[in-house]
Amino acid sequence: MTAASNDPRLDEAVTRVEQELGHLFARIRVSWREAAATVHPDLQPLGYQVLTSIATGKATSAGAIIERLQTDKSAVSRHVRQLEELGLVESIPDPQDRRARVLVATDLAQEKVAIVRAQYEGRIGERLRTWSEADLDHFVELLGALGR
Image (cartoon, rainbow, N blue to C red; front, side):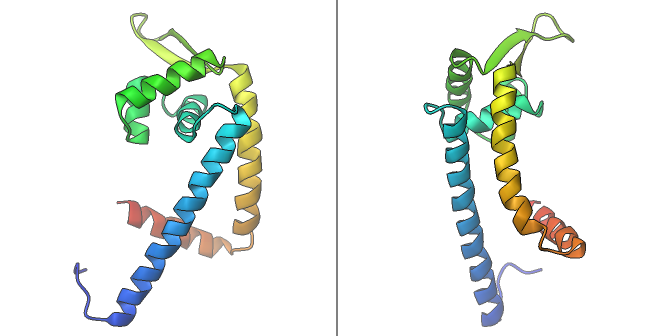
């Protein structure tokens, strides 16, 4: 593929995709804001993302959260501290290396995240279930290719 196109129809199609992605990203940001407020009124969207990274086990250290969310150390530290103050996250000794610490979501956090995820997955699931399995598989392939 080339970076430039001489086909105005293709250029218009790319512009439409970019616009739709912009709308989708805006809706996702709103969803994160709503989810954060559902967990706790003082929680910010990035704090919610930090919490879900911890709660799902996808990132249980500050370094892993920084890498996963592509954000800076001070923001992660601030949000982890807030999550600890809210009783949503605890820092415990790493079972693999007692000198290190891992972050774990409390039972309260797991309950709150489960409620939020069920609401979100219900909304998006309703929309996606109107698509065929082949369309969904193709969509996953296209998203994967776009992210590479």
